[in-house]
Length: 301
Image (cartoon, rainbow, N blue to C red; front, side, top):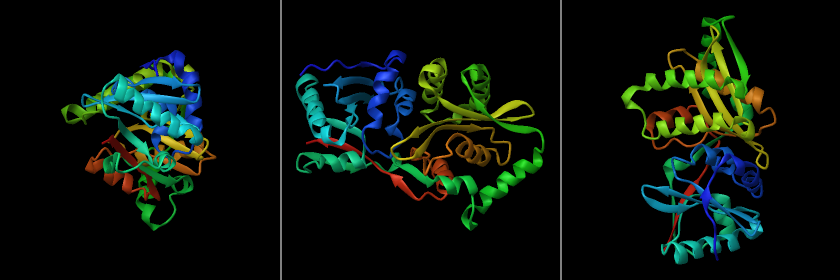
């Protein structure tokens, strides 16, 4: 079977987005924007099989991988076999799947004599109750509420939350430059790739229908966030959250306000993975997750 894999461009947005809404998936990869954000960093390509499934390939550390097919649950086994055929007979390689979601693997019910399936702990997404992040009620989240109260007290009448639209791109990019400069040479390996992805999102902001917001302090953008909504799961996904670390309480404040204002109907919030970074792990655990969206590496034996 001939599959025509090609890079994702802005003209593909409408076609591709359809396939992300066909089956249950609680990972951050369940929405189009997450794939679009990292498309250049991981050399992402796609093909449509029989108008039933979106097939995605990527390159990680020089190795060819694919995602699980994005399709209706009843079509996933056939679409997965198409990927096996492509890897085995076109690429002449064993199939390798990266970031396979738990729901997809259950639907496939793969034979473990034919596939090695391993949980990737550093890639699991943190899941929270939206109501908990909105109210920050309870003893365990008291510190977050205290930090927000400090922010409100120390910046009284000098700040505001604002939904950002495409016209704010220059303001956002100026903030991101300041935020990146503050990181210096100690920045995480993926960071510049992430910023390039944000830049690309802003260039195609209207076509992507992006949900963005910021906090302005003394009329200057000091925090910025991007999110998506998975309607099947009633789940908000927070792709990007950046704030001036020198302003106490700003991170928890934009976290809270974005959920309240941008995703009022959300039941769950996915705040993505921790990349195996200890500081990020502590920060995500401090919001008291109710569970995780696990992800797996699958390798054909």
